[in-house]
Amino acid sequence: MSKLGKQKDIQRLNVVTHSIRSAQAILQYGVGAMVDFPDQTLMTAAPEYWEKKVIRIHDERLEKALEVDFFGMPGGQGKYDWGIAYSRFPEWYFCPKCRIFKPLKLWVNEYLKKATSKQKENDPYMRKPRCMECKQGLVPSRIVVACSKGHIDDFPWVLWAHGKKESGICDNPVLTFETGATASAGLEGINIKCKNCNSRATLKGAFDKDALDKIGYICSGRMPWKNHSVDCVEFPRAMQRGASSLYYPKVVSSLVIPPYSDKINDRIVNSVGYSDILRIISDYEEDEKIDRIKKRIDKWAEEITRELSADITVVKNILSRRLLNSDNGEKPDANGMNYRIEEFEALSGMISINDLNGNDFVREETNIEMYPIPYIKNISLIHKIREVRALTGFTRLDPPDPYAPEEAIHGFVSSKEPQTRWYPGYEVRGEGIFIEFDNSEIAKWIEGNKEKIRQRVRIINSHYQSSYQGEVTSREITPKFILLHTIAHLLIRQLSFECGYTAASLRERIYCSEQDDKIEMSGILIYTASGDSEGTLGGLVRQGYWDCFPRIFRKAIEFGELCSNDPVCITSKGQGRDALNLAACHSCGLLPETSCEEFNVFLDRGLVVGTFEEKHLGFYSNWLKS
Image (cartoon, rainbow, N blue to C red; front, side):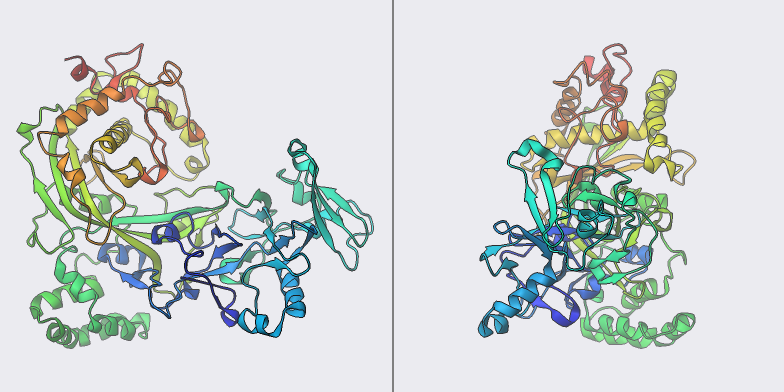
């Protein structure tokens, strides 16, 4: 369920027409994004305005990395649950009949003057915007302005309409919004006219980079998602309300792995005693927090032990690990290599699992000798897996680097205030297949085709360094990463035909590191990206057994041999976003963007199956010809 407005004028919205899925509240409709509902457009408010009784999700590793107590998923099932909060934005609406165009607060004032007493009592803020004269529903403005620092506001309609008038803005501007008789008129056919002084202007040139600079308009520093404004000297840009570049969410994901996946962890963090502990700790000063926790941790362990009827030693160890960070004393980096290495160790079987029946991570070892697939070292079937995703913030105009720290991202806007101890988040429970490749075979392949492989990889790295993200990061894309990433895409496309899931319901996770890192990794995890609270039905894991997976793997690689867009695709020197792909297009290698960690870049079929000119270049070229 939803709500809108400031804290002092909150209104309940219709739960049927104004609801979104939990995943949407974290991804495309997260904090600071606009949502087009049937009767109006609203902006998702900051979590400080949400219903306080959110569903708490825990992942110890991610909590430590992001320095929060939990992740909140909106509920909204009870009678008094309000769920996500929204603010009204954009605020300029026009009537499609009388063509009057003005801010919503003026429409509300008109409503309060003409509505009956009963109407005003039941609906004091006009939940559904409408014109009282024409009895028509109002239409929100299609154009807004945004700057690279994340601020957003309504287009300066009054200033634009009077921009060419020497005397400036009149005393009482009354705007009308008029469109041309034919659709071919474009922006020149859209007229903004002032009825008071007859000033008018079309929208021609409104989307030029310096359009607002020419009329002397600077950013207002407005942040409607938290009803706040700051000083800003940027010159914003006019953009369509639904433009994809208007909102780029920064989502951090984490797999819940042993020992954090044991069932006792969930029991402890969901206990009444643990909630009381978090409330007590929140009142401690930072410099005295550790000492005060140490003095009381024995008592807290005893209280939770009585509540759960558990082993006091286990409870105390978990509390010490969570509250005192007694495992290594370092803050983990959710985007760092060590974070991925921990997951790789769990997926590959390096970490033993004590409780196979009650935790969130269940792995089955397979006999790799029964899989007639070359260059694969290990295949693990993950019957149970839980992933936690958190919305840490967003950017506008330019996408954030998914691997860069927040402080290094230009224009990054946090989704919460510093004192708020939780991020919006949600969890996915499902299943997966983990494939570990032989590092020595990959190294041998690179060495045997060194110059030709480097030539293709050099093109991608050159384009990446010329892109916006490449300018702010020192990341280098390696041949091994492109190889693993492309194989993952080909496998997801084939598995979607075999296991009953759509491609958008499957997701990849790439584990790639070199010899200089702590562990050399060459693995991919393909898992279900959506599922209910109890997980999925086993369709993906079933395809991972020896009697199915070799056939699926070969068909996936064979599919990569020929694209319907060849020879254009296979001979490409750069395609896709910022030309960051070589032989990969929508007909062969691209997936729904929710399935890909890299948003469909760094792909090349040539490194997997070879090219027309270099048929033996691919990692699996010889296998396909056998």
